[in-house]
Image (cartoon, rainbow over all chains, first blue to last red; front, side, top):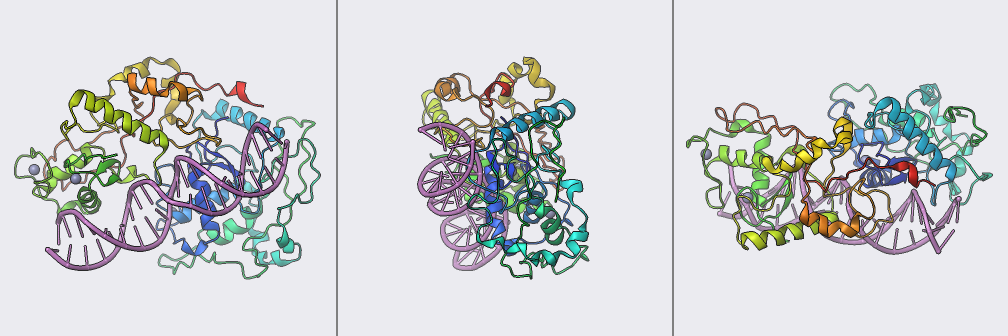
Length: 226
Length: 226
DNA sequence: AAAGAAGGTCACCAGGTCAC
DNA sequence: GTGACCTGGTGACCTTCTTT
Ligand SMILES: [Zn+2]
Ligand SMILES: [Zn+2]
Ligand SMILES: [Zn+2]
Ligand SMILES: [Zn+2]
């Protein structure tokens, strides 16, 4: 299994925070997440394309990429992955090779968790975002720690698969370049969501896993959203 | 690990911008790079030989040397050096002592990142490898060795080298020094400052770092799995 | 157990400082 | 302008703990 970091393209060290990443991006994400204020605005209008060599040059864009590929603190967990997961990884990898060449852009790299792109589910949801506060957000106590609400069948879809929370919420609100006038004072608003809830990032709770097996054909699993 | 500055020969302070250099050359390069205009043309026809004592006397030549030894803004590396790398350093050092005497010229000093020169030679071996040539572009990787998945043995070869590479590691590296596939262009455009380095030197890209022994087979991921 | 991820550690480096 | 010295960020390696 030879995955590449979905953020920068370097050989991946494992599945971290919801995506295959290298040690560097893993650490970076872990650090940044708790310290968003340390990230200064992109000087390139938020359009940097992250790769192995330049990944350290723009933290804002690196973080954005992390979120884009599905990383999230809450969407992580300990322990080994199910077979289901591994199998899918392989398949996906192969498929990708067929059409993209081994080195297809890290940009879209391996699409495990719903493609970042359209998954965005409009920003509308985001617009009303603060809504997050609704109520389920108090998941706080144990975002995931102890086996949450899952049935854990033999082949349960791997974690992080459906966690698209950050896609809609964080990515857009926070990192997406908010149309700032050039000299915008940065602020990069991603301080922390107003809505308290302490969740600087809230995850709506865990969407029921797409029941996997039983094949559906070309594993679609991705689209699901709830 | 006492390395010498590849630019001037003084004891190196570390690996900076892609090469082992002293503090001075590091700073010099960092400064000059953003300010090429400040460098005046060489008065000696671009033939100055840089050493510890005269390094400050001709900026043009000093900078040229920097580039020659592989320095580049994008070639910098962060974080700790991998064990694999360290071992390599030692070996190389030893080898060098055997044949060069402890005090071999700083000129050729330690060749880690293949000098942009003809270090290549063995690349032919590369070329004839059928599959590789096709599109193995993402092959590279350096002795810095970005690690793959964990339970990594003490000296884990970077990227896709097979696991029992470890065993033969010593032997191989000694007999067949690693050579990089050139995935990097290495143009090193500025052979000699055409006329004043004033013209921009585009050094965008960086000579691929040294690199580990080449692996031959295209990774057979199929076998492993599950 | 064994595998594998989160987190911690701290070797290392780009940059910035500021007496020369 | 130079380069010894600091500082904050990075990432290879390691430890702890969860999941298979
Ligand atoms: Zn990465
Ligand atoms: Zn950027
Ligand atoms: Zn030097
Ligand atoms: Zn000169």
